[in-house]
Structure formats: structure tokens, C-alpha cells
Length: 101
Image 1 (cartoon, rainbow, N blue to C red):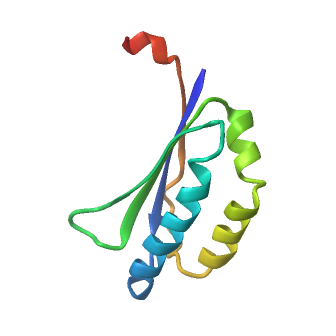
Image 2: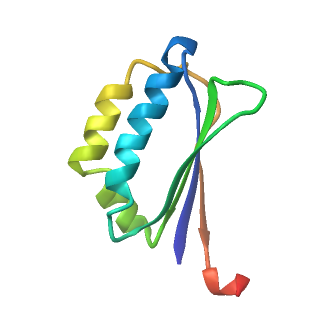
């Protein structure tokens, strides 16, 4: 069973470019992880400070292992002060990929 995550992020306007740069650096290493199937960032067309981080993992365990990696911890530290606090929450969904084949 795969894990799909949609994580909304609201970035302070002055940090939009930096956030994209930091994400791409983390993404490059994340895609090398065995459990990572997809790791992408989407920016809103109508609000340049609104992003959605889309993650797809082979398992919850793989995603948890990712959260303990050096590159993810560095990303979290580098981005800790650039977000606007919002009430929007992460969505976690478990899917059976063969259902779509």
C-alpha cells in the first residue's frame, strides 16, 4: 500500500525564491531514497506564496525514514522561519496502486 501526502505551505513573499531553491536541493537527494516514488512541489497560479508539496512513498515506514535523513533535517532547519502559519493541514492517503491499472 502506497502513502500519498499533500502538504500545503504558505511562504512569506520575500522567501518564495529561496523556498523553491531549498526544495530542489532536498528533492535531488530525496528522489535517491528507495521508498520515494514521487516528490514534487506545485505553486499556485493565483497566489505565488502558496505551495503544495506532493509526496508518494512505497510505505509509511519509508516516509518516516526520509524524515530522519540528513538532507531532510537540513531542509527543515533552513526553512523553519520562512512559512506563514496557516490552519490548513497535511492530507495523508493510503492507496492500492493496482486499482488503477
